[in-house]
Structure formats: C-alpha cells, structure tokens
Length: 149
Image (tube, rainbow, N blue to C red; front, side, top):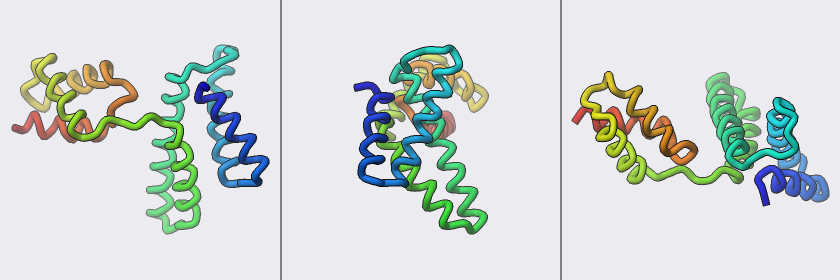
C-alpha cells in the first residue's frame, strides 16, 4: 500500500475511533499531499514524493517546537511533538552515524576534498547519491570533523 493510501486509511480509522489529535495530524499530512497533486493535476503521488513532503513537515514541526519552547508556550510545543511523532511513523529511518560517516568518507574521496572550502561539493555529492537516506545536519557535522583531521 502506498504512503498516500496508508494515510487515507489511517485517517478513516482515526475518524471511527474519535482520535481527534491523530485525525488532525493525518488531515494535515493528506492536505500537503493533495496540494502537491494539484500542482500538476496528477491522480497519484509516488512514495518518493510523499517522503519528501513528510521530511519537509518533520522539519517544520521541529522548528515550531523550538520556537514554542523558546517562547514559553509548552502546550503548543506538546501538540507539535505529538504531530511530529505521527509524521515520523510514515518516514523511513535515516542512516545511523556509522553508516553516515562511511558515506561521508566515500564522498570526500570521490570529490577529492581537502579543506572546509569543499564542503558544498561534498554535501552535493553525498545528498545526491543518498537522498532521503541521510540526515543532512548529521552528515555536515561528520564532514566538518573528517575535513578537520
């Protein structure tokens, strides 16, 4: 079953079980999917595109949580956290630190990077070959460590 169909199915289940928080989160996800579909009048949405949208929603939720916590709005931060956990249910897991470190070293060798000036080209190579599999922030941190050695 595609991610889009799974979201729709779980939305129906949440409606039947009167789980308003989950229903709201799933509706937001589905609305993002439908918005993307309207751009080119497509009838279906590929799982790769769904994952991109979910990653974007995940990032937005994390930023909102940080902003709410900084502003002392703990109740809204908690609501965003629960929505974030629902978004993350549908995302494939990212590579762990050890795997990311190996991919970063491969990309450094492939590009021939030797200084922090080469970070952009290494990140471009890494994200191009492992799109959706690697956490960009983790990769950037590891890359800076590798280039500093």
